[in-house]
Length: 90
Image 1 (cartoon, rainbow, N blue to C red):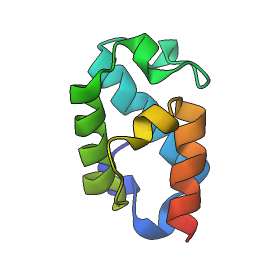
Image 2: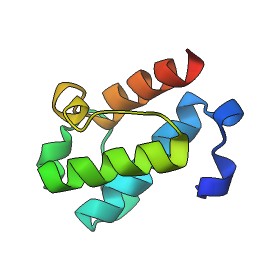
Image 3: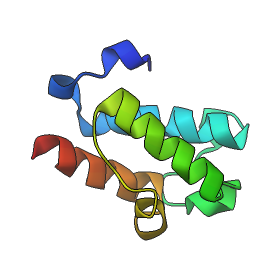
Image 4: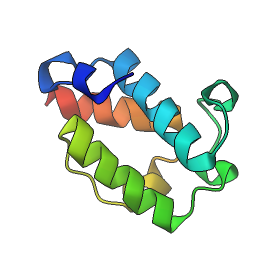
């Protein structure tokens, strides 16, 4: 999913999840098809450096302000999708 397709008014759970899968796959250097929604992000080798980078991507692309520590509390694609969808709706 291109960043242009993600605007503040179009942030659906499906779009957020698709975008997250692509970003996690990019950082983990594996095909997006191998990303499972309920697997902790740390299982894909995403450490604190990647957490900071992903949070920056979330802010830059989705326009949602998040703290990097969020990825330790909300540590799966599914949980992060839910959290970001709720933030976008607020």
